[in-house]
Length: 533
Figure 1 (tube, one colour):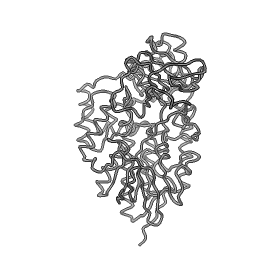
Figure 2 (tube, rainbow, N blue to C red):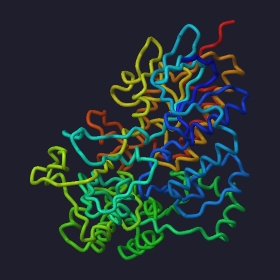
Figure 3 (cartoon, rainbow, N blue to C red):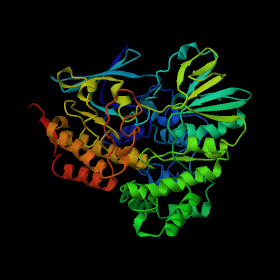
Figure 4 (tube, rainbow, N blue to C red):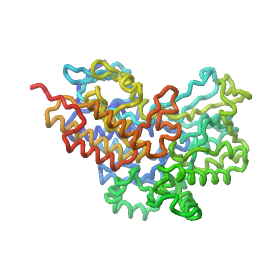
């Protein structure tokens, strides 16, 4: 067991952690990345389930900090697969020689702030510790797998998998009776591919989800060359959009056009594929009556695709579209037309227990050789609260967030000096293209750290009142939209006992402008503790 002193400890070797390391090196600082896995990649290291694919176009889901990297890396498809994204981040790690400062197979378990010296002591599961001035949590928004407390899990004699912790070696379901629990994004991506192998596939659904087709395809080299020729302009344009992505946003309101015009626009968006469907009309995510027109359009598509009316009815959501993250799929609904694929609505037929041989519902016993848990994540906060982080006075982050996460700008928490989060709760994060939002946060944090060194500031943390004001503002902005109107992981509703709080900030441009104003005003809203002479 050893202790090492560094300027910063970065928790996580995904896109955020690696770029944070790169930026701090450029400042001449020492930094140590601590990563639980044996490789880089973050969410793309862990999520290796069949069909795992990004729902943002690959030419946008990439770093911007190096123009050479942007120009030289070639994406093969419109929506990159997990293996291709993992190859990309490994290429970045090699290209910028980042691995030498990453401690793999090591999980951060504790972080304790020492008020005398304004330094953190970071503990790990290997027994090694780090003495550091700054801690940067680059642990991701969707990294803490959520496993529901179903009785009897340990008794199952077959194979168990979680989509967020998929094995590194290939999984073959050929000839097996497979259960998938959950119908969120990872299930919607994996079910069509699992169905291609399984002898039988039974999907257990709690809540039907909306999904639109990806219509993924190989890239046209001419179109790629044209975009790369104007990459800076293209990226700048995207920064001015709410979701920080090229969604071809409409400025027309739903109810200002005829039903025929409305359906023609939805049909065109459906044919184009992907998340730009939600940008069909300007008021789609703000006016429930407008939203219902899009919801009914997708319901109609489900009824057209799924041949069995009873199954189609189970798969058809009743609420608003997009207040839960819209899913993007390849042949998801059509998979239920296969004779060996069946759907169980657990509202009508609740799961009572997992047995040695399979799953017992209130109505019957099902036999399975494998169970896949596509049950999502303890989103936004889980990766923070699973570490014993103790700030001023030994206060735990779990206690500070007992009523829900409270941050200033999703970057800092009152009572936890020199601790930063990348895309934390209270920032746009999951309501944007994550890669440029990550870069925005990393650049802000790096500039802040550099400022503290220049200004001889020993510690910096969110002011309590500024934090309260920001939390109120985040929720006020969220309440103008349809997002809080359904139970979703945006509000923590998928985790029993988690406080119901809308966690992401809606709208990248006003957020980025607020961050700029805070810096321009000398880090307004932050407590700055000067160094002792």
